[in-house]
Image (cartoon, helix red, strand yellow):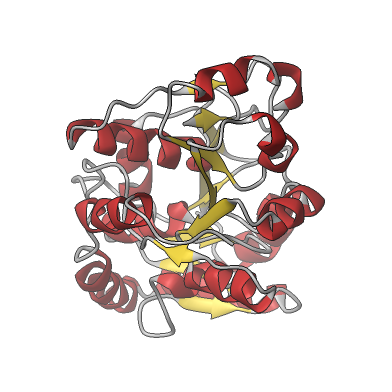
Length: 308
């Protein structure tokens, strides 16, 4: 399994969890972390040599596996797992999607549909939390709102939350912002850098509202994890959120109407009973999602079937 870097982003955590789960089920899994992030070509000699001893090679869909296809022995089956679509490198994803030797799979139904509309086969392996220890912990939620702060990827849309803070603070002066991320981010609130699962569940559990402002997501793990911690979620209607939630389990807003985000956040800050009822409804739904079910589907995908 190829990993684009040794960081702790959601996509890398998901791929690591898949690798660990397959290992637990008896597969011999080798993980290769790229020396140069998202650049397979700098290791073009090493990877084909490695593949001489492999039955399968799994790679994130936004890494240019298509460039190495001519050099990889035919007995090694190739897979791209599309966790996002069009967010990192759309040209690379297109090349992988249209390469008939590569098997395509995804965690999101909307991505599966899009790839199939492009004329390629794509299998779905489900939505589930990949950290088993994300759950609510006793904490004072105060008047805190939380979000993922990301300085590098504009599609995470952290700026929308920052821009909305003055309007929220005007009507809720005691409001606090609590955020976390993988890179340092200068923002008007408390920021936690690279929290582990234990720290993340504490962060979620300290918030009365969790905001997912992303322009697009494969599924968007922050919203799912917040729901597991019984934290009410306000989310942009970014396709990914609908893989596990709807209007009954979170408050949605359109990206063109950030004022609706402000309105939803203020509603939940001022009416904790309503937020708690929605959070319980969300928890009842997402707590049924199990990673073992995803692994069952992944094993079926790896077990055979046609590429294309």
